[in-house]
Image (cartoon, rainbow, N blue to C red; front, side, top):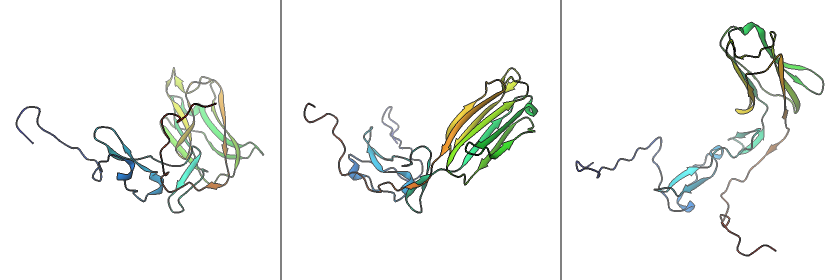
Length: 194
């Protein structure tokens, strides 16, 4: 560091040392499948970055098998309004009406419930308010969110007596490629389309 004005240079590094690059070939794979593919971000200066989770929405990444599998874990996050006892919810399997989970009798505050190993199929999440004024905003700032493996399926707060949303759990797993593509696509076509 220099004491001369405008001549100091400071690199701030979080975690492991940053790897500077000029092309994707400079970026080494970190051997963590669920981090995605490492590429060169050509900002100033160029730094190697990971593309992130390679799995699609509704799937979860499995490091051990280096694959994506359908997600079967649903979490309900609820922050009640000031009349928490009016609020309830349930998740039902559409094919036979079986209740997978439910909640009621809440105290004022934040509540969460997670359900795993759901079978493939379509489900319906329904939230209820016994007074019919939802959970926001006249009598507190309540809200809810339902996630599938951390991805938001539905969220809300303003509704009347009830609000319902369907979601689907898919079956099967999909392995994704584990190597970088050989070439990046060109930015413009090489010849005019016909």
